[in-house]
Length: 142
Image 1 (cartoon, rainbow, N blue to C red):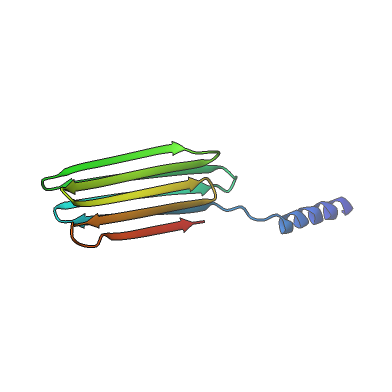
Image 2: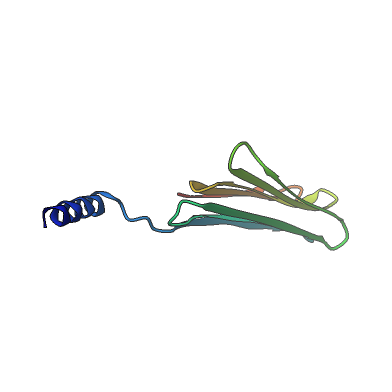
């Protein structure tokens, strides 16, 4: 009887001091558009990271962009890379121009596995003779 009580007491003590492990997930992203005259540009970036109850971590990242111009030129580009350690980065750029009128958008996203997701989008448009229109949108999720 004494062994049973001691074993039960140890099991109860361990259960009381051990934190319950739960799955955690973090997601985030940003995006934006700019338009002026006959031009438009948009970019978006998103990412996520999840840690299971057993401590395994998985992450994802995505980005994209588009640009349009009635009679001008457009350019888009997306790049992604694995940074130092458990970090992923993405860059999405888009721009369109017709003469001096232009629109551009740029989104940077970073995922730190199991820790945080951050994303920033900057947009700008301009018509000659007027003041440029700019905006910045940022998010950080932990």
